[in-house]
Length: 563
Image (cartoon, rainbow, N blue to C red; front, side, top):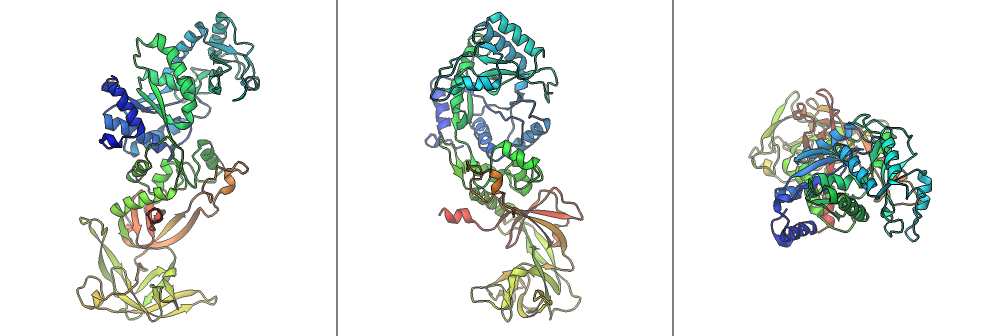
């Protein structure tokens, strides 16, 4: 974050005002509070970046708190994945916290609210309660159990905790205002009976606190100064404050700071969905291979596809902090990874759609080792050895028997340069019975070797092709990914299910040939396949079976469309 006050975003301005009004700087404390019911996705990176960015800017602690109040959906697998993702993005939390750490304190405070006549046990069905809630334009109706005696409420709530009731028979509700224009204030549920094993507390509890009751009080216990969340929680702020203030009265001796909630716009990305429920559906129905499928917008999926923390954090910084919802073009994210990998990825050659090229006048049995620079963008980069021989693979798309003047690749009778090697001229081609080209024959100019210093080597030709030596090449599996959805906003159609917009061509698996320098590559290594795009080594890769994911192509579409 910039240290110039003129560039402060609205959240930083709020904090600066609080500091100016007497809040001690050492009281600043932030948190990132994910629910461990799925993997983090690109939308979460904004909340992560804001909270941890503020922590860095103000030299204040940031907690990682797991909002683990629903054992029916939460698992340790998700906790581990979230910790891994936050760390991978480059952030370190001050304290690892869990809402389940506060179950006893929350229960004790709920007892206190019952004693003060501010909470009651409701024994109606969820359907009846929903009907009594009213609508945004009509008042709600009081529950027939709203005025139960304090002693009866305490007895029932104690029996709920002891497991004497079945799920759905009783809930604890806050007694606020059934006529409130804010539907969330109409006696919200604080506890429900849920006889499920919790990933941390096991079977110690059979009642679990609801999000609104837990969230603000967890902030209060941890003494979070600014509770930052996305805009959909803005209507919750009134309830957040009600719970906070009604506990603050008897908790302030131990917890002097009353947190404040403030909201920012979510990060929405085109051509994908951000709902964990919808992402879960993709996983459960086998549309994708898992949460880390490279087509998924999850952080683990982006990491597997070859995205870097630098690119993602730069993307979040460019998107910025705002109060208005909007959809960010996925091309911006692609631009950011392309920008980063251009600086860091080694250049190699791989042929995805091979056709054989034979240099007819190249000496039989001769082999050469050419020297190529790994990354021309980096002056300190190393070089690598690339073997060259009589028979090569080139891309099938790089040859036409006849072409117009705008085609600068190989044609019969015209010259092109082989990258880091020689100038060649097309002579003829051989076809099978179906008319498909099986071999291309050409000649080479032995004096035109790149970097040899001869006049011929300096001769300019309009086209340059990548290639691999057939004898030395390594066969590899390459997974070509496209957008998972064909529609820009797949979950924005009321009349259609988002699954109807799945792109049937989101994954294409091909067998390619790559240069031998890639043989000893490690999982996660990224490369630029020259003229093709950026690729990385997938988790499924093995020493004798290289598997590459296509991260992104070379074309800078976002930059061109925004200049």
